[in-house]
Image 1 (cartoon, helix red, strand yellow):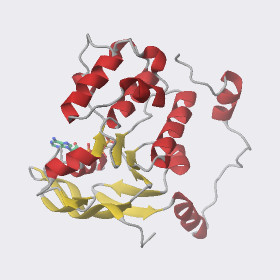
Image 2 (cartoon, helix red, strand yellow):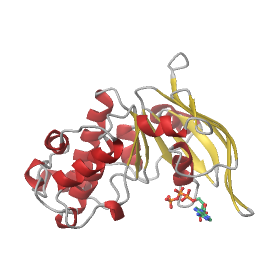
Image 3 (tube, helix red, strand yellow):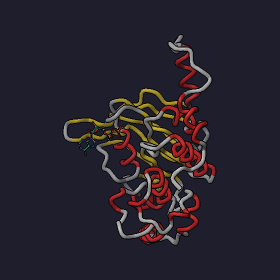
Image 4 (cartoon, helix red, strand yellow):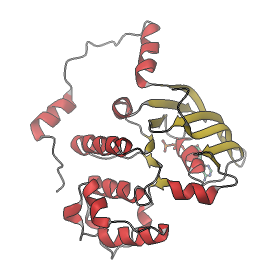
Length: 255
Ligand SMILES: Nc1ncnc2c1ncn2[C@@H]1O[C@H](COP(=O)(O)OP(=O)(O)OP(=O)(O)O)[C@@H](O)[C@H]1O
């Protein structure tokens, strides 16, 4: 991993909100082409860290480079090469999905192909629907489509599968995998450890504004096992989620 190029370099990042320090000197690299997960409890500082990297929030101190560009000097250039999930508030209620993608493309100053983008996230049949008429999973997929408008080098996904049913989550994992296969670096936050284990090449655990572990999921699990850790209960070869998927099928549900 060491000779891989750092797509994101965070050094000694600190963020204070008045006298509360939410991020306490974080340092980590995200390598080109990997899926990197920021994990940790509510309030640990994950979103704050992401939004500083995305140039949407001011840091207190430290250094952040995105594809070699400094967030202090090159914020505009960084915005051109990253894909960020837009807030649902920006989804004008009277526009359909095609029109929204056209609008956002115009804001980025790029000529996107809305129908192709909807096909990527399996929403072609909803092209003429309004955002508010979509199910939760469809809304998430549309939101991911908006991150791809400017063909970014990096996409940031903040809890992309929260609130989705098991099929929709698995299908989104596939979509996120495909985004990476197409050469895009992915940084995500999640509270689902199965998701992190399945998707992420490396994860950082953040607690109270500090990184307490950073490695591949496999290595982190091996490290835990080396301490003599054993699961209390014998684990069965399947779990209730497997039953759910087996009973209800793998396909996209909210067609
Ligand atoms: N604008 C703000 N003003 C003051 N405090 C804030 C602000 N934004 C976040 N915080 C505080 O900073 C800490 C980190 O918040 P942050 O949203 O980064 O956490 P998180 O790890 O993303 O949490 P979650 O998993 O709940 O999304 C929290 O204690 C939060 O209350």
